[in-house]
Amino acid sequence: GDSVTQMEGPVTLSEEAFLTINCTYTATGYPSLFWYVQYPGEGLQLLLKATKADDKGSNKGFEATYRKETTSFHLEKGSVQVSDSAVYFCALAGNTPLVFGKGTRLSVIA
Amino acid sequence: DAGVIQSPRHEVTEMGQEVTLRCKPISGHNSLFWYRQTMMRGLELLIYFNNNVPIDDSGMPEDRFSAKMPNASFSTLKIQPSEPRDSAVYFCASSQAVGQGHGYTFGSGTRLTVV
Image (cartoon, rainbow over all chains, first blue to last red; front, side):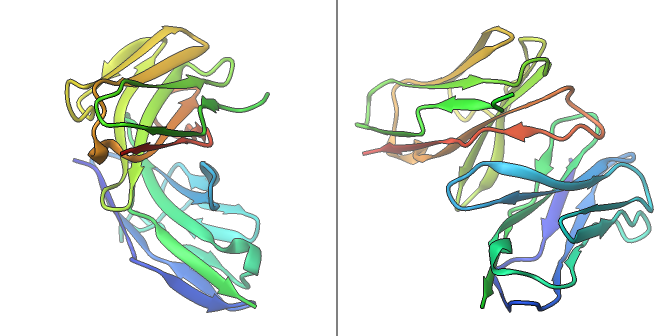
């Protein structure tokens, strides 16, 4: 079945550092890909998405590009802030409900 | 819109008791999902509905779990009897449709503790 693998955390960065969180997927067909963010004590929020190969999703300084050839959707941000500390989930959806990766906890220290 | 509303936010109950979790989806969303989040297993889809009809409940762990959606604005997830291993955060989410390209809106979750 469809699955998502993302790098294990936790990831700890200093403020203004560059962030990459790796995500690869296995799916039949051409799924849509998503990144969700979960702040402490809250539900998941959609951060960005891409619906076809080579699409780039972006939001709040975060970016991810749908790479069909490498089946990847890595999340990047050029300069992280303390307020970016959260758990990030990569997910995919074909014609079935979202399948999530296990999440990567990011801590940004001042 | 107030978003997806779940209640209660926290629930502490004794083993063997019945627990009912509630969800109000976003108006106009046709699909509703129940997920469970634990440290060990991450986010697991329990069941989802499309137009109030249960489509796939294969993620429901045992017969102790049941879910209903009597109308487009309300769903419940019931555990009876509850066990300590049911302790988790339960999320409800809704979407315009199940598949491609449709992001989900999640509620704030219900943190269930069974002692």
